[in-house]
Picture 1 (tube, one colour):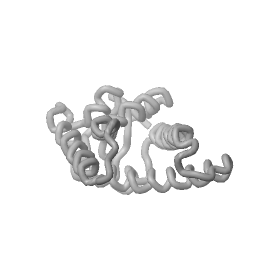
Picture 2 (cartoon, helix red, strand yellow):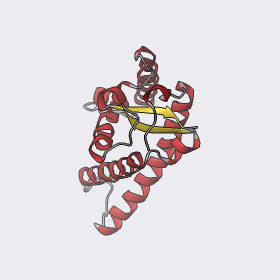
Picture 3 (tube, helix red, strand yellow):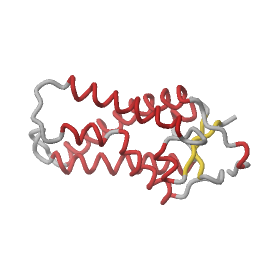
Amino acid sequence: MSLPASGLVAPSLRRRLASLFYEAFLAFGLAMVTAFVFSVVTQMRHALYGRQALGAVITVVLGLYFTWSWVKGRTLPMQTWRMRIVDRHGQALTPARAALRYVLCSIWVLPPVAAFAQQHLVDWKPVTAAFFGWVLVWAWLSRLHPQRQFWHDAWAGTRLVDAA
């Protein structure tokens, strides 16, 4: 589906964040199902055995889900909050552009994870605070973009737009 370039209006930041948190719940569920299937197939007996492989499998499964959904134009939360994803010209995403967006979306989680990666934490409150603080900062930075898009979308050549 192609949209006229002049009609590409970004949804409000509030709607985009609501969709993001809804998306996080769905992604968590998909990750749990993937982990269950992985543990059954590999006969995982301990949570620490094979955790790198499990992490890689979950990353690939989530990547396939998001790439497939974005090529179709939206995920379930995006549909609920009446928004679509298109390229910068209003065209549907190619699989390569959707996959690039998936990789660039890691900026939502990697900085706080990297900040605490080498620490052996007992208390997860600082990580949680850093994570939610970073999400709010990254979301707020979209206000500095000329079309109010998230910066990972600008770098991927994609746009979130209102879907009438």
